Image (cartoon, rainbow, N blue to C red; front, top):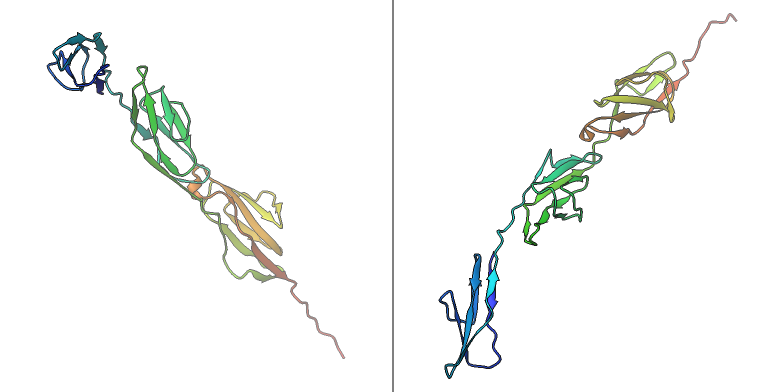
Length: 219
């Protein structure tokens, strides 16, 4: 940090002499010092200004770092931590020692120490994108005859809840489901890592046609 002192006089044509040896209208100070200045008029009259003690505080330092991946999916988050636990004003206006980020953006903090000196941290870019939706695939034709079935398979997940026409299918909590009825099948999945997919799948429609019966009659 530096301090610039300016000489000011009540008349024109004044020369300022500093106890640092400089002769100029201003003096730049970069370290602690007791500064004295004498103002000399053109006719040689001089007056010494009151001494000023200059205290130059060191410039503070601050840095931030993310605790995890900064490429996220919707529903997940990352913590960004400042090396200073207090005195932070983050780019999202929070004032804590760390922030939890769930939205895309460029994040930084401005740290101000007890002396009023400030420093700006490095920046961290966080990118949040939509998580992939779960999918359902059929092992064969989705139009079957009564008495037949089709295997439905959900994309990889941690938990599964299957639905038929919007109603939960009892005990259907695995990745695979054997469909034997007509209707709209969907699956709802959850994952600890949102990037692996969460939420409800698009429906897959199964059509079951009644198998005709035939018999012989004598005529």
